[in-house]
Amino acid sequence: MTDPFRIPEAEQCIGYTFRDKKYLKTALTHSSYLNEHRQLGECNERLEFLGDSVLSLISSDYLFHHLDGDEGNLTKMKSLLVCEEALSTFARKLGLGEFLQLGKGERILGADRPSLLCDELEAILGAIYLDGGMTPARRFAEPLLKAGLENFQQHDYKTLLQEVVQKNKGEVLRYTIAGQQGPEHEKTFLCYLYLNSNRISEGKGRSKKAAEQQAAKKALELMGVNEGK
Image 1 (cartoon, rainbow, N blue to C red):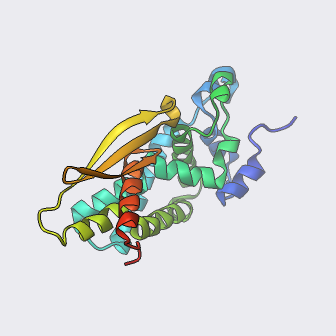
Image 2: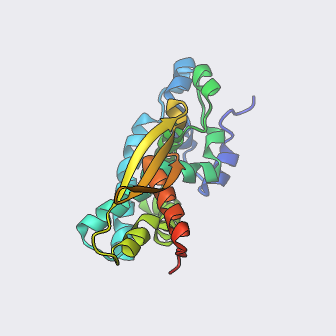
């Protein structure tokens, strides 16, 4: 009988071979799938809870050793690196949604939804921790944190724009979320950026923060400022 979980393929995507395969099967089992396959015994919600805590510790330790700044800056960066958007993007890059077992109704909506991918990734991290301990869990999570930190440092357009504007005293930037489109699981936000009372750009993104960053990037382009300067 064909294994719907495709364990060897899933392990290859994750980059970790489980000693006890039941941990991975549970991590890939959504509650809707369990409702239709009661014999499995458990969905991934408890592993998600554990993985969230493990990720919190790993990300705190990583930032402590790789980023200067006070507690406030570290806390802000941590929230950006482990937010739903960041986790779901990483899960999508690995192709984890392909292995998530969903019930019929959830399957119609699709496995590529950010909330599902985020929960799945945290559950997998919890499963790795239970199976192999902190070392492989850290090895799985750190590429996500490294990529996120590098991306933020290279593309924090809001901070760069603020630095440019502050050179002229009295200038004030204001970001306003003007609207949103799409279904609940696939919203697109629209942000207007104002310099004093003048709207100078707009941006769209899958989150409010992403829309703000896009608006700031466009403003910098209008000003002729390169992000590397």
